[in-house]
Amino acid sequence: MVSATDGLTGKVAIVTGASGQIGQVIARDFLEAGSRVAWVGRRQGELESAIDRLSDGRDRSLAVRADLRSEPDVRRMVRAVLKHFGQIDILVNNAAQRGPTAPATQLGLKDWRLVLETNLTGPFLCARECLRHMARRGEGRIINMSSMAGRMAYPLRASYSASKWGLIGLTLTLAQEAGASGIQVNAICPGPVEGPVMSEVIARRARALGVSERKVREQFLRRSALGRMVTAEDVSRLVLFLCSDAGRNITGQAIEVSAGFGLWSGA
Ligand SMILES: NC(=O)c1ccc[n+]([C@@H]2O[C@H](COP(=O)([O-])OP(=O)(O)OC[C@H]3O[C@@H](n4cnc5c(N)ncnc54)[C@H](OP(=O)(O)O)[C@@H]3O)[C@@H](O)[C@H]2O)c1
Image (tube, rainbow, N blue to C red):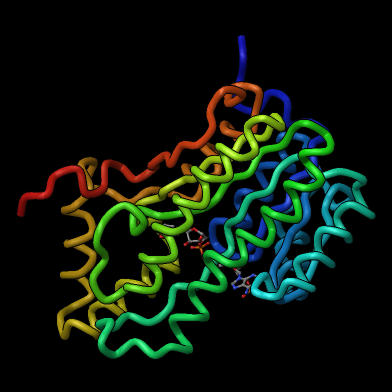
């Protein structure tokens, strides 16, 4: 009998954006499965407090400050993880910026670049540095956190949507390139995730459209076949499954965990 966390004990996982809503649940769940975890983000204090709050296995956690838009920062981060843990088995490219909620005609180049550099260039840099190490060992798993916004139009969120579509293209290409080295690369596309981030997304969208937050929330829920949002735990369980023995033959996929978001293109 294979369980969805088999094979994770002792593994070393880098989780970027580990101080955020979803990243901290993923990092915590890897620790609970017996893995060792590098918690990565720009704010060291937030990473340390997430570790204190969520981790019984402090000795199996390492907080690494890095701005993932910066090549030297990414290289330093990967070196720090290798120095501390000696290996990297799993990379979860989860960090992201939401960008503005505005039509593309009002989207400034600075905001566009911030989102693309964080959500697409960052995962590329992290994957490139980790792939070199993983290829030498002949194994590794990379999970890229895309979104349902990478599957469909997302009006008022052009930079975010473009970055998440791009991340799926990167995923499929890396999976093909790295398959011969025994490395698996997959993307996950969450639908709206219940919590503070979606509350802010809804509030900003309501302001941009001049409608109530309640109406925007209803619009999101109506588009989901199950009539609900997903949870950070739903997303985390899929990450762990893909990195476990149970996921050993899955690669080059963009898998949705969305409660059936956007199945019907009707009203
Ligand atoms: N929440 C949802 O409804 C939803 C739905 C679909 C997909 N997703 C995806 O799920 C992932 C996690 O989202 P979330 O809701 O947990 O977001 P979040 O709470 O805003 O967390 C984002 C994380 O990214 C880090 N980060 C941002 N810019 C960075 C940079 N330049 N370098 C390093 N770290 C950086 C942030 O930490 P610092 O600010 O300290 O750097 C933070 O830890 C994202 O990829 C998001 O697009 C979320």
